[in-house]
Length: 177
Image (cartoon, rainbow, N blue to C red; front, side, top):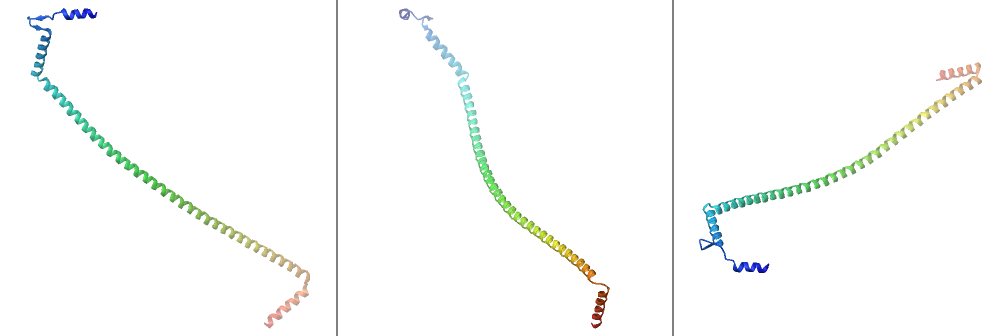
């Protein structure tokens, strides 16, 4: 096969038209005409204009993207600052809540201590009142029992003559006085 290609390349003559124009010459002429038409129709200027428009559009998009990036960075910084403020406020609120809770616990302890003291005093007062009432009842009962016993003793030991002597003695004591 290699021999066949060598034979073709050595012995083959290139076809010519009008006796002088070869295929390569025709292709060259067609390319020159094509390029001349492109230049005459201002195709390179149109392509350059389209490329310039595309470059301008891309540049505009890049500028917008840069502005958006800067806005996003500023928003990020702003929200980070807000987040830091919120965290600080949360810490302050937690500290205040802890302090208030401690104050409430301390107040509850003092209130409970005071309540216990008041209830203890009230209980002691009730006990003292109950003791005084019981003591008064016992005294009343003792006095009543003593009165009844004395009345019974007097009734048993005194007769009408003893009563007269006591009445006479009382009158005499009043007359002297």
